Image 1 (tube, helix red, strand yellow):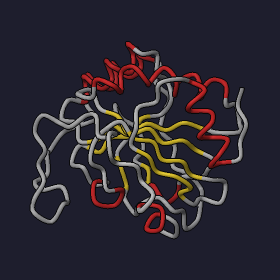
Image 2 (cartoon, one colour):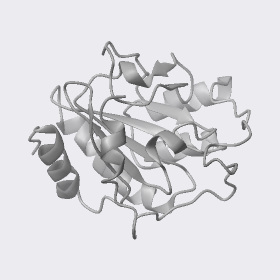
Image 3 (cartoon, one colour):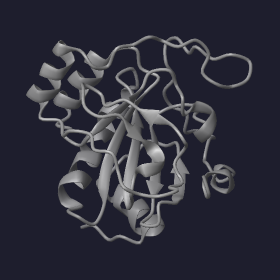
Image 4 (cartoon, helix red, strand yellow):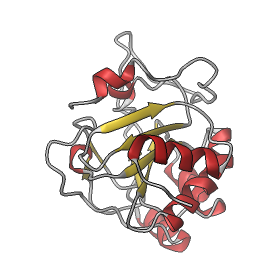
Length: 204
């Protein structure tokens, strides 16, 4: 990880940790504690994912990318994705079905997915969520079709210093993490301004 440590000091926390899981299995080290044993790939979940029209996950081809050295499973079935292989520009949205503000902002990420074309991609991560079926139902209800990974055990907690949801991680064309922020996206313009400022990509 080349850029994450320096950027973590810039993460906005005050007033932004708007959603916390009902049960947070964290030990004293600040890392996820017990493994949740949540199965995010079952026949029922695969069927729900297909019905929602959610895109398949695809491992990237970046080398030495700046995202944490963690491999996450695809929500609802599909290939697991090593995060350092994810090539930018990409906007990563951390969400969960228990996060009420996430429901309101997911349509903005979907619009970016649709209008970003080949200039910027969107990737969702269902974070610290023990109800993958609920997460897929949320995606369907909000019209989300971009690829979704799952982190039911909170593997990203210490790496990205996650203190609440929603969150956004912007990865530039070189694979470096350009910006991490935990805040509620309240408009499409707010999201595209972040993309313009930190990734140098203008999306109308």
